[in-house]
Length: 85
Image (cartoon, rainbow, N blue to C red; front, top):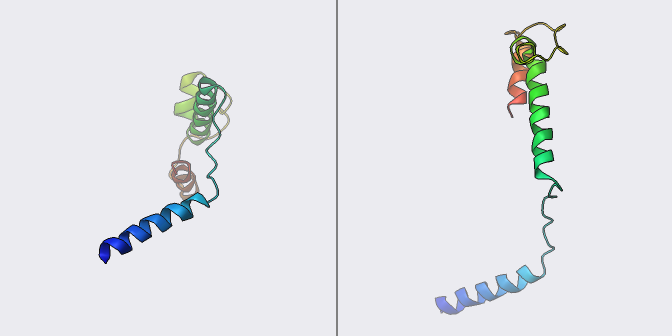
């Protein structure tokens, strides 16, 4: 009796799976190297905005020289934590 019930559940699950809509796969980048370069650039820019003195200026990126260095103000710490999520 248990085997029959298990068999029917398996068959019913298989039949129901046939009628499920297909799951769309994540889009694949045409050029993985370009996608990685874009991701690295976005990461560096975000780090440079958060800590302009260490990340940007020492790396030779002067776009953020007018911004104050990393601080421990609550708003800055919250931005830093949010960027890590």
